[in-house]
Image 1: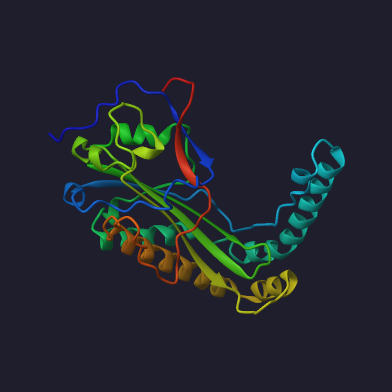
Image 2 (image 1 turned 60 degrees about the vertical axis):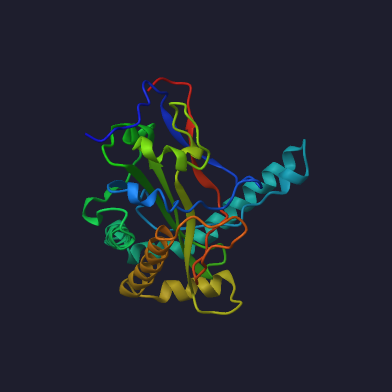
Length: 283
C-alpha cells in the first residue's frame, strides 16, 4: 500500500481569493525529479457557471474620496447602470445558448489535456458544479493517488464585449509523502496550505469579436447576431486552446530561476488565484 500523507485532524479548508504578492512567482512548474513519482493523479474540474456572464468596469470613485457617502452612491449607481447595459446585450446570447451544456465540452477538452500531459486519466476526471465548504482539503485527505489536481474555470465577455475570455487556474497538491520536498514552500506541518502545491499556473484563452476599436454596443451587436451554433463554436475554440496550453505547461519541467517560461498565443494571467486557507471551524 502506498504511503499517504498523515494530516491527522485538521481544520476545514475554504477557498478564498488573494491578490498576487509581488514576491510570489506567477507560476510553479513541476520539478523534473518529482514527475516520475506522479504515477496516479486524482483530478477535479470545478465548473460552477451554468451560463456565460459579462464583466463590467467596476467604478472605484469611493476608493479615492474617503469618508463620504456620495462617492459610494455614485459607484453603486454607475455599476448598476453598467450591469443593466451589459445584461441587455448578454440576455439574447444566453437565450441562444440556453440548451447548451458548456461544462460537458470543457470536460472533454480537459480530459484530453490530462491524457496528453500524462499526469492523469482523462476518463476519471471528476466535475464539480457546486463546491461544499472544505471540499478540497477533504478530497486531498481521502485521495489514494500520488497527488490531486484542481482545475478552476470561468468564462465571461470583457466589459467592452471585444472578446470572450475563458480563464483557468490549475494546482497540484501532493499526497504521496515522497513529493513533499517539491512543495512550493516545503514544510513538515500537517496543515494543507496554498504553498503546499507542487504545481500551479493560471491561463486565459481570449476569443476576439473581430471588430477593431469597436464600442461596447457595436461589439455586442456582433455577438447578438451570431447563431447558437456560431456561439458554441467560439466557446469550443476557447476550450480547445486553453486545454492544449495547459497540457503543454504540465509537461514543462520547473524553470531555472531567471529563465522565462515557454510562451504561446495564450499567456498566464495575473488575475487573483485560488488559495487554500484554514478556517476557525472544525473539519
